[in-house]
Image (cartoon, rainbow, N blue to C red; front, side, top):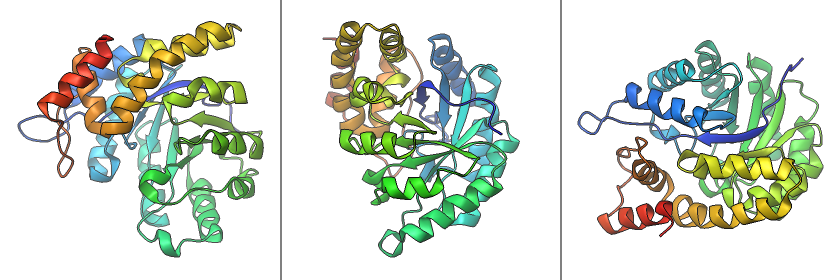
Length: 294
């Protein structure tokens, strides 16, 4: 039986790489996690989309979890993206994450053979992963990259599995987020787009896994607090500040934009891993101006 549920604002942090060697930079990871936790986020997500998960080695993922776990507290969730291209691989990544101290895992749909993927095969995949997982599982809908949009009816087929506790919806579609909220009332439903954070809360979602929380965590946390205190006006004003930080940085530039924004606020973003391309000098200045509020 699940004893606690993931609720609140979660920062899907980038993976910090050494600019010379390209290897994982554990000291910078520790500093980033500690600062974001001090700023009030309710959890950290490593090895997600913003974390460049497809570009990581399994050993690097294990190290990410172990290092991040050193800086999180018992009250802060450590969630690990463990989606792989086979059920076997996903289970192995999930068990490895749990062994290193993950509190939960975030599992995307396999994407390479998306043209041959069926609802039945996806249900079987997620069931098998949840059956084998030592920790709670969140389903991850990210059609921008997987080319698969998980149907709300499919989530209903998974709703009775005791080990599956929620879903993160990064479709960017408010109607899809609403359909998820209605389809799985027992689950935690988390917005994957900071632009929809306030609207998602109004729908009954319990928070978000949002890239903006990596470089403007206080804005996201305060929005949730104002909403919980019943001040919709204040929450709405915060959303107006957050939306351009999401659309112009996360939406346009992906991991490279989030890393540049973190550099601009005194955290460590650092380089992306090839073949991802770094931002141009002009785009880095644009990102810096946005986070400064210019």
